[in-house]
Length: 123
Image (tube, rainbow, N blue to C red; front, side, top):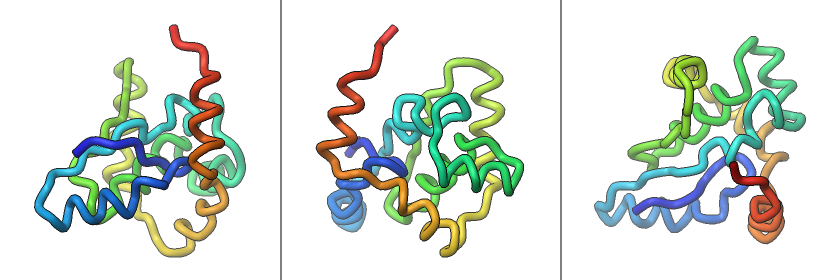
């Protein structure tokens, strides 16, 4: 099963958990919210956490997605070697309960997320 899940849009989380429990492989797409969770567009508190830990926001956003017990594969969407190198640091980033709570503030209602996504300029 493949679905969007990220720090902003978490509405599929329970369905993905059930799918994983039923034996389906779960692929997370848009883990960086089409660029909205990267250095050029991330919002507080993600930027604050990134500055504190001296990591890019992409690292933290991907690490949280990878930390989901039901996530078998997390797609990064990297388009350049530099982005891939940065994204790979998520594999070594530890996500703890305090971080999860701080970043919960980023979660948006699904309708808001998808409305903002629809307004993105696609190259």
